[in-house]
Image 1: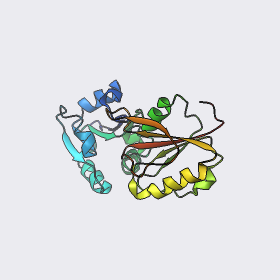
Image 2: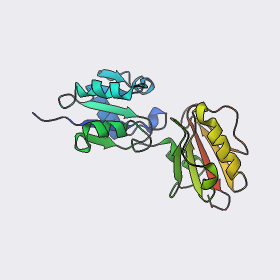
Image 3: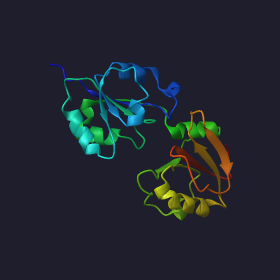
Image 4: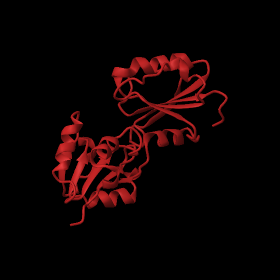
Length: 209
């Protein structure tokens, strides 16, 4: 019997228009759909068994294992699977040869596009799950930095980064990208509250846009 691979697909930064046709084809053919509740609710038309991924990722992986190999499992991840996503634990559990990855448009891609510059050579850091284990002042030599910055628990680290780079970098706050309430603005200091979907771009002042 043919072993059916697990498909891990990026769902873009938010708006369904950013889901690629290849990703949509895979999603519509799913027999088991896996992902965060918000992502699962984005595809109500898909008649597939659903596995909600919450804080207990190993529990979700165990539920996937019951269907692995004999049902078409599609794992939904926000943005691109290669950037701070569920793809890593899925591949670690089931193996690279058992997984097919469909890339997506990440919020980092969208953020740099909004300010009209490329992201080649950018330092990408996540302050979602925990604060980066790096001193903000050590990043002063970086020309371009993108920080996934929506977790209020790690706001102190992001504030410290802005303070350390204030004299050398310009800051662009990108919130809810591609959604109806999208906001992209240049800032001098970080607001007290941030949207959960926030990207902070730090661009060295002499770096051409």
